Length: 155
Image (cartoon, rainbow, N blue to C red; front, side, top):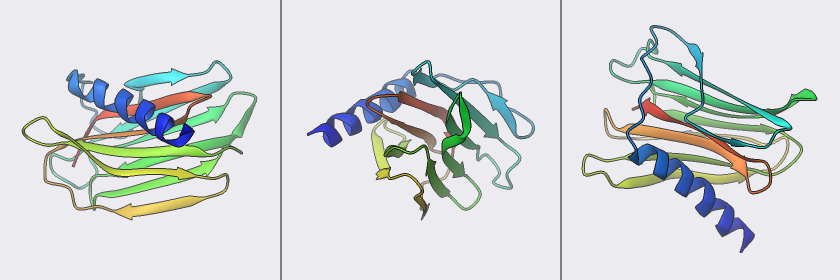
C-alpha cells in the first residue's frame, strides 16, 4: 500500500507540474537551475540541471540530485540524456528512493516510462525509445523526505 501511495504522490506531482507548462529560459550549456518540483524536507537539498548542447538537436538533457545537507556524500541522482535517450538512477542516500521518468505526448497524455524504487547503493540505467521532441519529466524522492524534479526536458 505504501509503495503505491508513494508512486502516486511522485507521479501526480510530476504530472501536475508537467501539465502547467512551466518553462525555463534555455541554457546554452549545462547549467544549474531551480528544480521545477521542489517538495524536499529541510534536511535535504535538491539540485537540478539542464543542458541543451547535448548533441541531440532540439533535445534537452537534465538531472535531479537530492542530498543530505549534513552529509553531502549521501545523495541520489536521476539523469536524463536526450542524446541516446538514456535514463540513469543512482542511490547513495541510505534509504529506498523512487525514480520516475514520464513523457507527455502531442495530445497531452502522460506516459510513465520508468517508475522504480532503488535501495541504497543501487544504480540502474534504461535505454529508452521516446518520440522525438516530447516533453520529458524526471523526479526522485520518497514519502518521507519529499521529492524533486525537472519538467522542462525534451527527447
